[in-house]
Structures are given as structure tokens and as C-alpha cells.
Image (cartoon, rainbow over all chains, first blue to last red; front, side):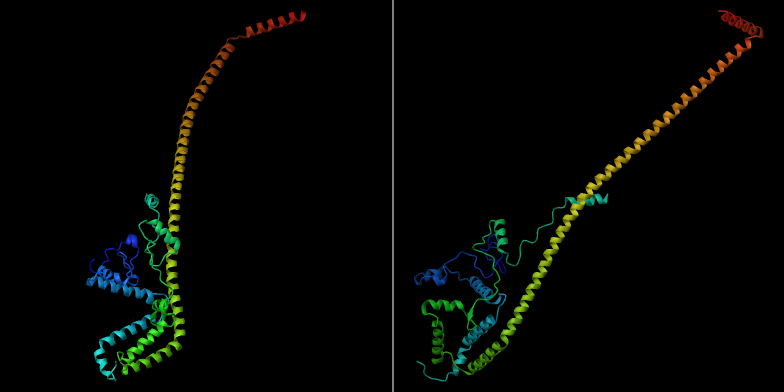
Amino acid sequence: MGFGEYPAEYNAKVHGPYDPARWYGKVDTPLAQTKLGELGAWLGRRQKSPQAVTAAVSRGYWRWLHKYVHPKRSGLTPFLQVIAASSAFFYVLNYTKIKAHRIHKYHW
Amino acid sequence: MLSRLALRVATSRPVVLALRSSSTTAPKPAAAAAVAKEDGERDLVNFPRRVRPELPDKVRLGIFPEEWFQAFYKKTGVTGPYMFGTGLLTFLFSKEIYVMEHEFYTAITLFLFGTMLYKKVGPSLSEYLDKRIDEYEAGWAEYRGNQTDGLVAAIEEEKKQQWHAEGQQVLFDAKKENVALQLEATFRERQMTVFNEVKRRLDYQVDTQNVAQGFQQKHLVNWVVDQVQKSITPQQEKDAIKQCLAELKGLAKA
């Protein structure tokens, strides 16, 4: 699979129009249904190449788009979610500076 | 000649191509079934076409997916997730992991005014946007409907033209037959003319011969009669009359 190409598993004759939110490879047990003991094996089966990680993030992004952005009567939700997520992200980024604003010395 | 060429082209052209088979909108169930029947490889059970939903998935408090609350519901009931959120926030606040600096109070103000705006403007704005999206979609649907109607009309027109072309063939045949009839009629007319002319000439010959023969006969008879009359002398006439009288007397006696 080169840059800008469909995944190797995708076959237009079987799968129809390409859906960027879908995983077209072999279906594994979902993480939520995996037993704790099998977690190691489950993680071992994951692809961890940068390309696979990027593809997974892209699929997640497209799932989010289909879920909240693309519906016909989409509302304020996706904007609020982006605002909340970016707030949290930048809060973590700036945490070392924000920590200086603590007003109590002891916490535990 | 050109019209015949056009005719041949029109009749040999295949029927107009089918409408575009791949469409960006989800087909209706019947159409989907037809597609599934059409190409056997297509797996519509595990890979159905994605349908654009009318409404987005449900969220609570503006941002949190409903599924997260459902995951909590099985273990903790309805208030569980809210209690978890409150507890987590309390924990973060109390340990100053989440530090309440100046930005936090700005955020509270922003949140308050945002909520007020949402409550004030939200309903009318959403109504307006709903109306607009309906108009927009109706516009595209109308465009698409017009396109399909136009194509269907074009197909009908094409079929009609082909039908006309077939009619032209019949017309050609009729014209050919007509010309053949005219040729035949002219041929027969000329044959008749020839016949009449020949007959007229032959009749003339016959008439001429008849007239000449008649004239000769008449002339000969006249000549013979003349000669005979010339040869009869007055003496002979008198003798003949005497003879006749004598015979008449004899008859009278008897």
C-alpha cells in the first residue's frame, strides 16, 4: 500500500464504495470484549508500524466524522468536542507552567 | 443516398446506454437487492452501503457520547457516571492536579455566557439551519430528478427516432414499388403503342389492297358490260322483242 492508495485488503467488487472509517482486514476480537489474560496476545496481534498507527487514527477520525459531523442535522456537538479536547490537550502541554499557579503547598 | 446512410446508422445503433450505475447516495432496499443480484461477489450483508443519518449520535452534557453512559449504566445505574465525573473533578480540584488559575474563572464566565447564548439563539438558529439544509437537499434532489427525467425523455426520443427510421424503410419500399409500377405502366403503354402502330400500318395495307381489288373488279365488270352492250345491235334487239312477244302470246293462248 503506497501513499494515497487503498488498503491492500480492500476489494471494490466485494466491499463496494470505499469507507475510510472501516477496517477491511481480518476482524479481531474488540478490545472491550477481550479478557484480561488475553490482552497480551491481543496486543501482540496489533500492527505497530507508523503507517498502521496513522491508518488507525485516520479511521477513528472518520468514524467521529460519520458519527457527529456528517449527519444531516448535525449540531454544536462536534465543535464543543473539539474545543474540550483541544483544551485538555493544551492543558497537558502547558501543565508545567500551570503548576506554578497552585495555591496550596500540601495535597496528600 | 445520404438519407439512406443516415437510416442505416440509425437502425444499427445500439439502444441508449443505461443510467449511471454507481451513485453517491444510498440506494433504496429494492435497488440494493437488485445490485446484490447483479454482481454476485458484492457482500452487502457484512459491508452494507453507509447511509447518511438524519441526526448525529446522542451526547450528554454537550460532548460526552451516550455510549459511555450506557457502559456505566450496567454497573452503576443512572447516576453512576455523573457521580464518577463529580468525584473525579473533586479529586482533581482537591489535589490541585487541575489548578484553578485565572483561565479557569474565564472559562466559567465563557461557559455561562455560552449557555445563555445557546438557550436564547439556539432554537431559532437550529430551526433556520434545518430549513436551509432541507432547501439545499431539496434543490439537489430536484436537480437530480431533472437530470434523470431529461435522460429518460432523451431515451424515449431516441426510441421514437429509431421507430421513425424504421418507418423510413417502409416508405422507401413503398416508393421503390411505386417506381416499379410506373416503369411497368410505361413499358406496357409503349408496347401498346407499338402494337397499335403496326396494326394501323397493316390495316392500311389491307385497305389499300381491298380498294385496288374492288376498283379493278368494278372496272372489269363495267368494261365487260360495256362491251356486251356495244355488241348488241338494234336488229338483235328487235328480234329479241319479237321473240318475247311471241312467247307472251303463246303463254296467253295456253
